[in-house]
Length: 552
Image (cartoon, rainbow, N blue to C red; front, side, top):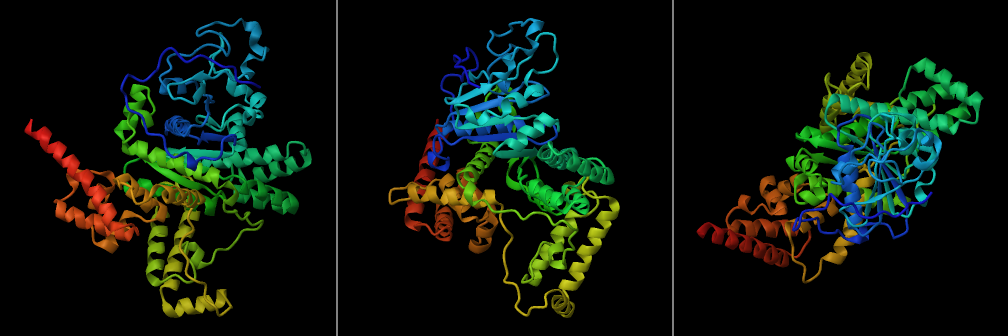
């Protein structure tokens, strides 16, 4: 399969003088020639999958990589509009609006991926196509004809916008990709669709693995009949193991290979930004699926306006909150690609139901302090309350009440010194206590921090000018939240955020800002003199410019 060259489109270019996002450091990307296929899906429509796909493609292209974006949405074509390319209703290889005779239904034209140049150098789009006499796109029903050859394309990255739903072709593309990204939103139908998508993906992966063994496939079908449609993956593994231990082990291995990356879009509240971690915890416990949370996108009018303007938000409004969120997600995906060999290994689910101890019920550890246990208890209690958003469709009312009872038992037992001591002696016969440990960070976060530290070692020197963006980058590389700095330095989170965002209007008088920047530099283990001198120079320049405009 080849990609024929195509001339640049006649429409859709950026208006003269329009700004664009400065190219990020190419050091965060894998070497040239490395091929990666990234699929963006996730179940429900309207949650922003196309926005994530388009802007991730733009970010990769701005690294100097050759990127191919493929519109594989079975519901219809839309990526060409997001990129400002105008109407595209032709068949591959034909002029726009050309009509093909009905006899070409099986002539193979739709197996050839025909890209179009876009307004972003290095980024090409393969749009959806329609055939005369048909109301559905040509390609989705024939994905198997070309999906095998995606990695042979002349591109460093191939991005697939899969659209909504759990059609077999959509699941096949998601499963064969190097990275599968699930996009969700903080609303019950979207959360339910995310869980349903990973359930369907596991069933599809298992059937594909057993397609040539009808006997074992019938055993899987028998186990599915016991549990009902789209059962919890770990329950299906255990049901299969009751019939055949080896087949159960194969199913557990297939389940461990499903590692979707999760993005939560349209976040309005603090609880929305915490939804991603909650989905990861609950999915791991009640489905056996290990998500990697790669970030959220705040609700931002700039994202909506970029859709209206038919330009990716990374180009239309590169300094907006949504653009920065998307840039961080892209950076984490790149970090995962660059550190793929060091990705943490996931244990396969047990072939028999496991009984969690009370520490595991709270997602705590044996060495946790009373304060840590109280925080863990509060978090779990909130997660399992009736009406909990991340729990949507995951448990029956009976199972939910059982989980709440276990959480209360864990609280009453572990926060009573005598009962805790007796419980530890009964569960952990050994005398040596477990060393305290913090919650394991997702591999996406760890990989991103490693890449950021490498970049900063090259960026920071005696001549470096420290901007708010650079200070934020140093903080992210250390894995520190603004709230932690606020507790240590006694500087309000509002002022710290204003320093990072260079919201100079929100900063106090110069003498106070100087002290804030010095304390922040010390916390980040930077040279306070250099940081203060360069940052305050930017502040003075901005205020001088503002004063000049006010006088006019």
